Length: 63
Image (cartoon, rainbow, N blue to C red; front, side, top):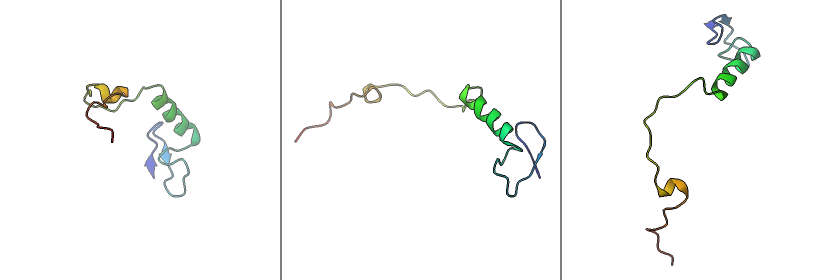
């Protein structure tokens, strides 16, 4: 058995539809934390340019 990443209780791994969580409740709590932006994935900031804003047609020639 593995530990549930939310509550720490032992979680059945085989045939568990909520894996890696022990229950649907723990799965939904984790989902809510992602939705509320409590978890963050570290990343470097990416500078914005015209292409990111829908522009960027300057270098394309129409045929």
